[in-house]
Structure formats: structure tokens, C-alpha cells
Amino acid sequence: MGFGPHGALIASAAVNNRKLTTILILGLVVFAACSKAAEAPGEAGDPAAVDEVVEISTTDKLRFVPSTIEVQAGETIEFQITNEASGEHEFVLGEVHEHGEGMMHDDASSTGPIEPGSEASVFWTFPEAGEVEFACYIAGHNAQGMTGTITVTE
Ligand SMILES: [Cu+2]
Image (cartoon, rainbow, N blue to C red; front, side, top):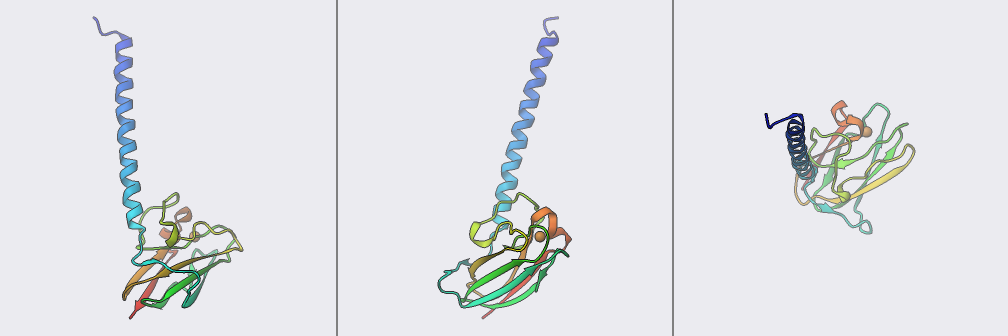
């Protein structure tokens, strides 16, 4: 028997290594898919040329208030998010997706986590009419209904 316990150990290590590589590759694919899903139509607006300020609160009931918003295409909108809750929330523009905490977002279209009692803004311009979603992904809040819809009109 030339294949003793030592050989078995090496074979086992090789399998584990391959598993790890697979997990790493899967991780990269998920990361890439998420980054893409988080994109919102439009582009970052100029904070020095705001046309309209939309005030939104985040609450302990895991809701945006209001959660239905209407803005005009072509205008520079400041989404001013005030966190009235006792825990962190965030505002992320773009189609609501499954992914939860730890998600990477385009910096300009997201406030990032907002401390209780603090506020943060996203400056954005939508090029054309349509519907755009937004959500909070902290601790799976999106799955509990912490989402909203922006109707962009011509
Ligand atoms: Cu939240």
C-alpha cells in the first residue's frame, strides 16, 4: 500500500482548497451582480444647483415617510434623509433587490448608514420619466418593507 494516511491527508487538503476557490469565485460573482443591481437610472446631481429638496424620514417601524415620491425629470433633487429611529438606516436609490447588509453601493446613489438623530443627502438627476425604487438594506430592512417608489414625471 503506497497510499498511507499521509497521502489521504494531502488529497483532503487539495479538495478543501478547491472548495475555497469555488466559494471565492461565487463571492465575486454575487458581488458583481449586486453592484450592478444597485445602480439607479440617472446621475449624481450638483449639490450647489438643487432644484428640489425631498425630505424623507426613517422610522423605528422600518419605513420611509413618505415612501411614495414624485419628482421631475431633469431636475437636480436633494433627497434629505433624517433618521428619526433609534437604530441605523440608509437610503439607497435603485431597483430593490434581495441582498442585505454588507452590500456595496454606488457612493453617489446611497447615503450609507445614518446614525440615529442624524441626516444625510443624496443628490440625483433622473434623465427621463419612469419609476425608480429605493430601499434600506441595513439588517434586512428591505425584506421587512423598508422600500419606496419615486415617480419621475416629464
Ligand atoms: Cu433601515
